[in-house]
Length: 507
Image (cartoon, rainbow, N blue to C red):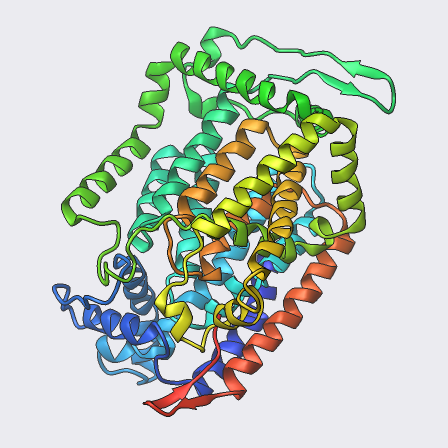
């Protein structure tokens, strides 16, 4: 198996389900009523036309133009379209995301192979196929939304950066921002990841393994001055180093967590200062993209393009709580297992004072977020086509106290995520990921689970879930959820008395 096998497997469901969706729902639906006509205007060469209800930049439409341009010779040959604009039908535009979904699966495979070169090829292929079935990503593969294109651009940017192709990575990052503005946060996050990889290479944490009564002492290898002159030529840590660092992270006790972050931050800034010129030159493409983005926001007066009143930035800290629980459920075999729960409580029990202080602080922060920073957007309350509408009414608002009873679950989910990541990633990486996720989610006033897709992919790609059983269970769960949501979408339509047309259930 390999990248070709992954692409073929994903194509086996993308093609037939796309045909089914286009047969039953041939007309644009939900947000497609904005995106499809706008893309069709671009197909006619009318680039000055813009729907003021569209909040995202036109990156998806440019990708669709390239996609249609590739297909048009064939369509013209079989007389399926006599002009370029005729080739921009709803079905063809939707197929843009079908192609991008296949590309996403290949990118996931390549990222896994790069991050974990010793991982078996079959496992990497299985992981990539299962992630292609992640419900939020899978469902919007068959509609003309920006989510799949956004994920593809971000993953491609990340892979290019891992391969030290910084100019190409920045170009892909610019494309990601042109597709969805919030991807500027993931550009910064990817840069942080690369800075961490470069500056902390060779650093090894001190490990105290309580169970075996031995320790591995800190062993920092100084890097020769002439080996850092070109960051693109820096080698990735060897498999042995990676294994040692993973062992280190998994053994560090909670009282050393804060000191570990301080130590790593200090080491990073010392190396940055020592190599400031090299870093400025190497990361200048990303700096230029960020500068252009800041200039755009200042010129536009907002991060969104249209419908600014409905998408005003709001302090929605509860959104971060929702993401933690949703992601833990999406990786239930790992984060909701008895062994994970027992391990989490065991780590707390080993250091009672620090552990209980962390839990108390997290609970207080969770209650404050839910009580003061939980937003019920008008779209959430009024639109019964979305699943969050029912979760809000039937679960969170079932009783006034219900939202508070859920706080311990939110806290448990985040503590499990941080604990798991802390075993296999550096502490400063875990902090950077948490901050990036918060920066993307807390300004969003509307609860949309599809906003969680990119942070979820970064989370699961770096969680190092190895056992076949967990991935197979996740694959089974994803398949069941996908079957349910697609059946509800296609075969359970309903109507509104106050508005004509057929309504369908959607994420």
